[in-house]
Image (cartoon, rainbow, N blue to C red; front, top):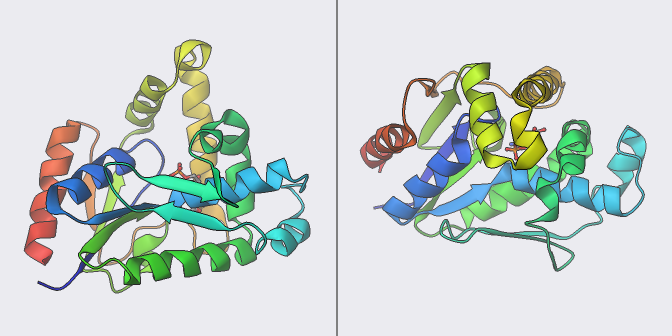
Length: 223
Ligand code: C5P
C-alpha cells in the first residue's frame, strides 16, 4: 500500500500527542510533533537573546537555528543546532512564549517547509500532529482528524502531566490553556482551525484507549 498521511489537529490537552504516537506505533508509521518544532525555535530565540515580542527580530532570526526532528513514534527526538532540545522545550518559559513566536509568518513558512519535507520523506507514511496540519501544511492528507475536549477536561489532563505546585493549580492551568488557544486561533497566518474535510472527535468523555482505537480504525480505512 502507498504511504498514508494522517493529520491530527486540535487545541492543547486534547490528547493529540498520546494518540498520534500510539496510532503511528501500532500501524508502523512515522510520527511528527509539529508543536515541538515551534517550541524548539522559541527555545533558540530565548537562548539567543531575541525579543520574542518583536516580530521583526523573530522574523530575521527565523532561518538561523537548524531544527531536526526524529520521527520514530517510540522515541521521537528534537535537536536545535545539534543540541538535544527535548527537555528545554517543555519549560514554562517556552510554553509562555511559543504562541507569539509561532504567529510570525516567516517562522511558519520556515517550519511548514520542514514539515512537508519530513512528510514527503516518510516511506511508510506518517502521523503529523499540530494546529494547522490538515488546513495548511498537508491539505492533501489521506485522513484529517480534529480532536476537541472541554476546557475542564483539557486542564485536568495537562495538570496530570505537570508536577508539584503547577499540578496543584488547576485553575491557573485552565486559564493558561484557554489563553494559548485563543492566541493560536486568532492569529492571521494559519490559525488553529478544523479543516472542512476533517473528522471531529470530541474526547471529553472518552478514554485515551478509545480515542486511539477510533483513530486506528479511521486510518486503516484510509490506507
Ligand atoms: O502542541 P504544543 O502544545 O506543544 O504546541 C505548542 C505551540 O506551538 C502551540 O501553542 C502553537 O502556538 C504552536 N503550534 C502551531 N502550529 C502547529 C503546532 C503548534 O502554531 N502546527
